[in-house]
Length: 409
Image 1 (spheres, rainbow, N blue to C red):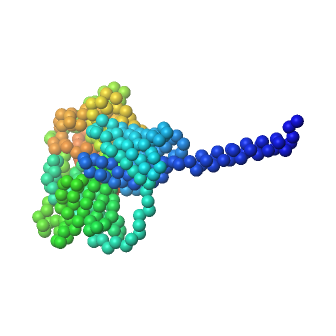
Image 2: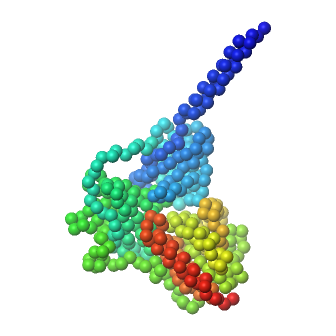
Image 3: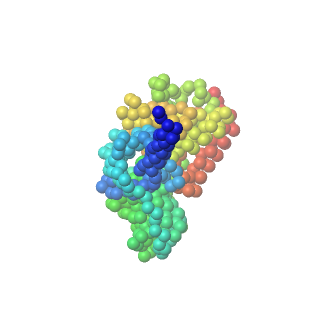
């Protein structure tokens, strides 16, 4: 006969085992948390912050661009292997996890060789007081760029020894590089899944800055208020960089959408409307910066007569199977027209009416009468501070003004 006490003892043992198993699972090691990570790009180690969240076999990873997160679209743990896919970039973090370290690679989805990837658990930074020189403010970097620029902007925000910054070019900015002052120099870095960048900055005796970019290229920056006195040119005005060859001509386009249907500038949906014709590509970091703003404009003004069409220039493989572009559309909730225009190297061939068209992104602002009323090269992201707000305001004001005009159908 089984006694009541023996039954209770068995039940107690089962409860104990259940609680113990739950506790073991709860205490099981996990890769979740903040990591001090690094990729090797062009032979240079680029440090950055990385975060892993989730539990069990489902995990998510996130890069950072300042305070903005770029999170994975899927993730899984297979034993000691962690795979995180970023479909919006067409890339993958594929690492082996061992306690407090990650080792593996960042597969760039065919856009070059993978970057070696490694990371260690993030540690709290020591709070030692460091006396750092002041470099806060706006600087100008003289240059001769492949796009015809004579100068870039260098935007610096400083709090003690901690600094965040961005280089703003005509096609957009670098994203937020961040770091601190130590051993006589500021070391700033950035990697958000794109645009790996390392800047080492020292102050020259005359107050200018010496900037070593990715261990190779040396740049000089002067205070913007001193640039004119030192015969340094002004940075290019993005609204004057690209022009129409014939200002009276309509901007023509005729390309397939993602379903293969040809969409043309003559389609009824564009007639009598204000149209933003955006040149971009899902591979383009500054296009990722701009997409949320264009989506916001479209939602706000569509009912008043605004249409947006993205002419997306993708690599040949993506043109055949635009999985990354579809993920880009999903990531930013894009509801406006997206067309497959060609490969990036075909930009001027596919849009021959424009002059000096060499920046991704570029946005043509078309009035209700079908004429191009403005062209904006590049896009300044939140990393560019006041220039980001200025870019959004200029385009928004232009759209609002054109929506008040009467057009011809």
